[in-house]
Length: 378
Image (cartoon, rainbow, N blue to C red; front, side):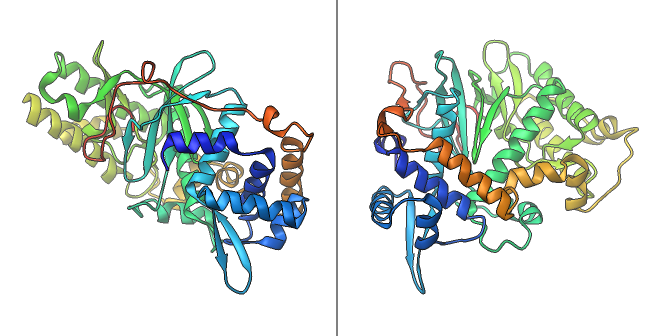
């Protein structure tokens, strides 16, 4: 489904349709395929109204239906997109979305957006499970034995992990896009007018300064923030064209520096960047010397992955990032919030926010790119 189709479909949904999507989302805490009876009960609407809404949502590709020992439903990425866009729009964070992506990667789709004041932003939708399973082990640490966890919720955790890294690094003075918001699997951040380092190649006027700035940010990230990017290369550095200012982007693979393999990942990050500048600009930097400078004086614990993350993220935050508590009290609270947001008043459609599409004249002129040749910040 294209963004134009998705936004058009969203703008046709009633508050009841959105209510049903939210009920299914909450019910996924307990069910992979949410029974029809639970949807009816938790939505507090008649079987007939719920059935009609589910048929509509199924036809729009926002839910899938399963028939076995019972009839159940689950959210799709498009249904999850709708819930994220609805919340971001209702909070006044975004008002319009570009019809075509800035980039389509293995684990995310990235779009230009505008806030109500017309300021450009970037919205990154995490989409784990498309082609890669790199994140699974990390996230399964926190989802534990919940066998019904879907790729949607692992994508949510990926988004929150990236947002957490952006907040920590931005606050420490590392040059990253300013984080704006996160909701479900969507991260909203500052729009940077620039190109990937991989796209510029020999076009930099001050390559030594750019390389030095990148390595300084890698050092600050390790020494002051206490994490390692873990996937740094010329494809994950965005260079602002006006002043050749490099931004480190694409953070979902980060690990704490106390992780036992963190130094290995840090060395690989440095090697990737240094090799690019050696090949394209004939700059000679000793990787071992750079690594020694960054890690010198830092005491490392060499923990297992889950222990290392617990040193950086509190248990309360982790629960928030995954699903929230599964107790009866918290589920009742979530359902109560749905009642407040989507109560019926007879003015459903007029009360629901709408999302627009950026016109061609206002949209960035970039074209769809694949993972090997992405445009701007993914």
